[in-house]
Length: 302
Image (cartoon, one colour):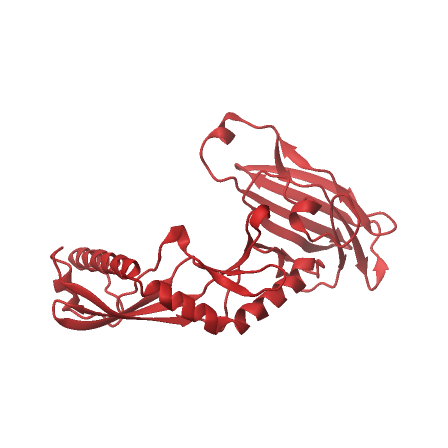
């Protein structure tokens, strides 16, 4: 059997009073099929859904990422409210109390408490790497913890920037940037030949660099600029035996290079790298590179 929706319960209220006699509908969409469970809240506004599963098939053993679209809606007095919208990327029973660390009560299954207000749905952190869309405060403990981690990350941006700058300035990282530049110039020539739109601020002489694999490229300087606003934070716990907390780094690299005797400047985002934090003290420890290498995407013309 595979789990489409873990066992889940909740207490719903309206204007401070238990919301009794309301219909709650749980839906999971997987492999173009729809799975539904319905229940009615009791006099205390309580509802419960047992684990929603389906039989494992041959297709499940093929290499592919599981994908389950989850939704819980509340139907009361002719109105419909979105309680839960989440895209699940596994068939694990991943709403267990032990995994999620978010249970606000002593319930044996995942449980949330909510006051129905009719507010527009908004995103809330379910755990350090995923968020749920719902129309009321789901009272996840991770929400407050996430805010404190965001603040700790912002307070340590100078240290994170210095360490990331050191990593992108190594000879190995510069060699990777050299390869990226050559690849991008070749791509630019092909786009030009196929009459595709050129990047903004396109410089015609860049086309010259793409015709030869023997271009002399020397990376002279690399600067790192961290995005201090509008960061999208994604958090990950490491293995339990050596647990670390990491946040995805929002940054760009600005490269100055001499190419065929001409000085050029390019920039692009640094992709998928993470800053490691100590879970309890939230102190910055270091940076984990994506696939143990500097990964960045060049934006010619920016």
